[in-house]
Amino acid sequence: MTVAEAALVEAIRAIQRSTGWTDAQVAGKLGVSRALWARYRSGKGSPGRRFIGAVSVAFPALGRECQAAMWADVTPPKVAGGKA
Image 1: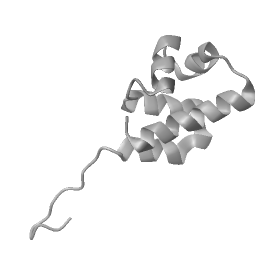
Image 2: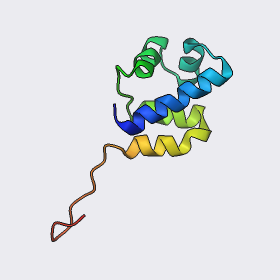
Image 3: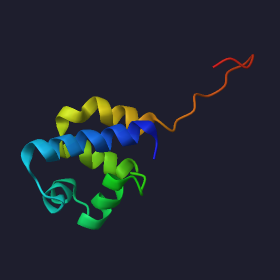
Image 4: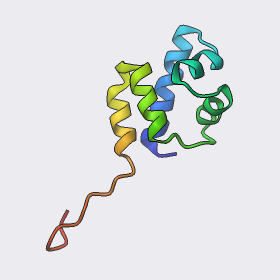
């Protein structure tokens, strides 16, 4: 899990704590199983782009975190002369 993905999961956990939602309720909002949400929440899984997209729909306020997580693994292309 990248740092940006971990920050996104932590932001969702903060929402979960503030609302009192169960893991099943959060998973339902995200369109994933409770078991998959538990893996992400515990840091044992790495959310993919599909999950990040679901977060951006379910929790629009987390747009910045979604953008960071979506682009965390993208390496800028090299241009002529070796500079990015």
